[in-house]
Length: 189
Image 1 (tube, helix red, strand yellow):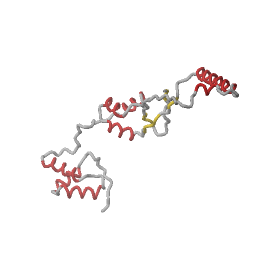
Image 2 (image 1 turned 60 degrees about the vertical axis):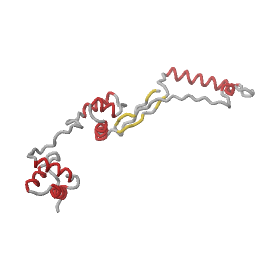
Image 3 (image 1 turned 180 degrees about the vertical axis):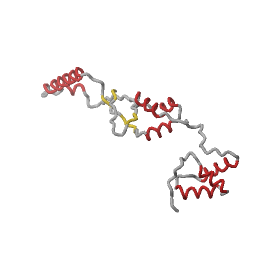
Image 4 (image 1 turned 135 degrees about the horizontal axis):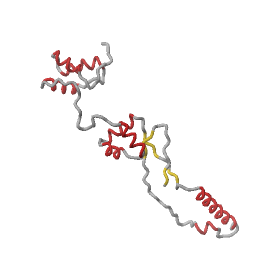
């Protein structure tokens, strides 16, 4: 058997109608279509559904729109929403696009988008802030070194050996949808 590339769009089911008009059963029609057009051409259950439709006198060959997904998907709008804020979740995007979040995920992946975490940077420090921090640190280190011979050096009086202090800030970090070659944008804490 020679397999042929299907020239008919998958949403137009001429081959089902042809097999129905020949009088063959749905299961046999599914096997024949599978043999000619390949693995992903049709499932037997689909053939049974089409045969039931034909038996009821409905010979419309177009797929009917489903209620669980939009008929047309606006990819430009999705791109616009991502351009406005690439850190939105798929559920937030789905709410704005009025579709399911899995539909958003599929379209993002088909567009070549991947999720990346941005790197945290301490604060948005100005050059003045950076210079001030460096000056203070250098002064404290010089003060510590100047008390070299003393039993109670400067830093040892501040930091004790029996206690530890940790500041824990649980900041919510969000992924952003980007093209695979783009770097994630750094976020200020």
